[in-house]
Structure formats: structure tokens, C-alpha cells
Length: 330
Image 1 (spheres, helix red, strand yellow):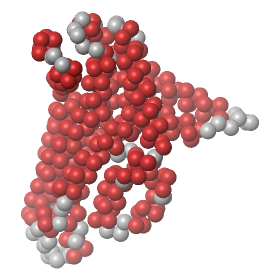
Image 2 (cartoon, helix red, strand yellow; image 1 turned 90 degrees about the horizontal axis):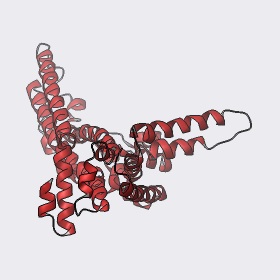
Image 3 (cartoon, helix red, strand yellow; image 1 turned 45 degrees about the vertical axis):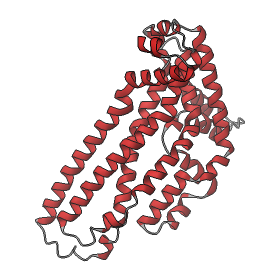
Image 4 (cartoon, one colour; image 1 turned 90 degrees about the vertical axis):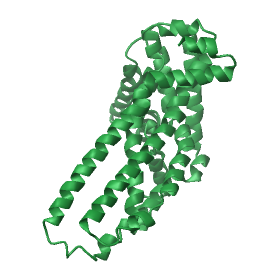
């Protein structure tokens, strides 16, 4: 920690060292949680593949060879595996970011390390923004990289499994896959995810900055309890309350927006029904294309819902910066 005080000169260098500090203290969640989860998934997938190949080889495979309905779906397997890798790491990331943001400022006050950092020539704004940068951008970027590596590993397991069964058309698993398109789509989701998750991350950091104890209670349980009370009141005769809007704002946009890709459900609800989307996807390739389009649809940037959430999230982070200036201990 003294390295920051001695080497940091300009505000840019100070902010860079603050980012490094966050990585040093939280690399277990940012990196190793996803790496360990991915390793477990790959090992289990390989074991299941071995068992499946042994069972198939113990039976007559002639009925499977040349089955165009089966081999025709191989083309999408590679892309699905790459997407699956990102889905797994993204799910782990959601939990990591949620609890990282929730404890980002509270933990400094609980162990009184905030007093040390305040004694250095480091502004509260830079400290809070460095934590927000990890929650909103850097951690998701690492997740995409690990997710692609996990997807490639699952891709290899799938290829080895199909080749071991002797099914025709297994080469299409490589020739018809689009790893660079998947990577580009995942990178394109980063700015959308940053903007979409701002209200949740901002709210969690604000609660982390002001709560004297048990920030989870203030950030999660109290808002949900308030929603339940409103729901009970709405059940009374003569009382009409916008329950859908309340749960949407508090639950979906306020807390669950840390989940990657959750803006897809909002877009589908506004523009088309799930039945219409499913009917349009007649092949695995069509389904994959629909998912990628929904994740990266540039029309999301024209959504008023998105920008209202951005404004609210920025306000929460600004309040968290202000709260850190006068609250030193938990």
C-alpha cells in the first residue's frame, strides 16, 4: 500500500495504482473464482463425454452414422460452446460483482483501513471510482476473456467427443463455427452491461458507504420488504398500486441488473413476445443469431429506461463519494 503513496504522482498514476490495489485485494473473485468454476465444468464435461462415448461404442452406431438431422446441428455446437463458456463465467461474475460492490466501502470502514487511505494524498472520488471501474468494466472484461478460454476448452471437448463416436460431419464443428464473431459480440456487450448495471452497482456502493453494519440488510432485504408491504396493501379492496412498476424498478432494475445480458428480457417484453422470437428461430443457427442480436442490438442505446438507470446510478455513486468523506468507521 505504501507503493501507492510513493510512486503515485499525477492523478492518472494515482488512479492506476488504485486499480492495481483493487486487483491485488480481490483477484480471488475477479479471476480465480471463474477459473476454478471453469476448470470444474471442463473436467465434469470431459468425464461425461468419456462415459457417453463408452456407452455409444458399446451399442450399434450404424443407425447414427449418416444421420443428417444429427450431423446438421454440429455447425452450431462450436458457437454454442463459446457462448456457454461466457454464460458460466458471467453467472459467477454476477455474484462476485454484487458482493464486491456491497462490501467495497464498508469493508474499508470495518477494518479501519479507510483511515490509512484518507491519510494519503488520494481523493475519495478516485477511491470510489476505482472500485466502480472494477465492478462495471474491468471485472466484466476479465470475465469475457476467461469465458472465451472456457468456451474453447468446451469446444475441444465437444469435438473430441463427436470424433470419438465416429459420426459424420464432425469437421463442421470447426469449419462452421464463428469464434471471432462470438468474441466480438461479447466485447460489444461490455458498454451495454456497464450502463445497464449502473443503478445496481451504484445502489450497492451507496449502501456500502453509509451502512453502519449489515449492508446486505439495507441494500437487499429492506427494499424487498418494502415491495412486499406494497404488494399486501395493493391486495386490499379499493387500493390500486402499480405493483409491476414497483417490482420492476426495485427488483429487476435495482438489484438484478448486475446479471449479464438481463437487458434482453426488457427488450423482448417491449418489442416482441417470446413466442414470436421462438417461431422465428427455425434452426440452431437461427436461435444463436437471435441471441447475439438481442445481446448487442444497438437500439438499446435509445432506451429511456437505460438512461434513466444511468442517471440514477451516477447519482448513487456521487452520494457514495460524499458519504465516504464523513463516514470513516463502521
